[in-house]
Length: 244
Image (cartoon, rainbow, N blue to C red; front, side):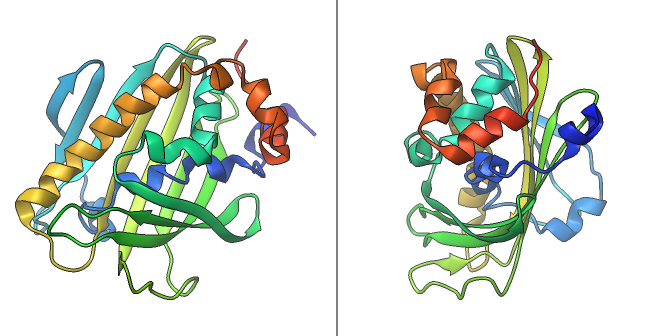
């Protein structure tokens, strides 16, 4: 197997890395509007986290993009995101994230439930996750899109009809990683406009800030400890090639 093939080959466990990142787009514009590449506007930049939004023509809700850099190697960031059992501790509004099914390591379906903010009911979504890695830069890209027909609607949640988002990790050096989150979707049901557009920036800002703190936990500073507890994560660690 060539070096390029090893980098681009689907990673059997990597879909777990972004189970919760899908939550970043629950209250955004319909993904069909993505073709209109309107200009991003800086909404705020504080503590090293920049949040951008854009208002697409004909859509009342905003798209978002969050950008930050972390003083940690990409392997450490991957380990933090892969530890799904702790995501509810740092990811804003996340209630549940679990694997449903998949045809292969690069063809997975996951279920997410998101807590509502009064008076809005909780939301849920089933999403199709596809992963790719650039063979030259080693950047990891995850593309996520909602999918019907996998799991019936749950009575306690409003099912999101449309969701599309992306998560990118780029190694800047052996000890520094760039993180970018972008998303948009249709939350379904009635949502007060002011609350919806507030959450568009609150979710990425709070989640990214807390995730950056979690990266520094001992289990992630030495990912081998985490990998030793889980065969899928151990396989992930063996397949990925990180900058040295």
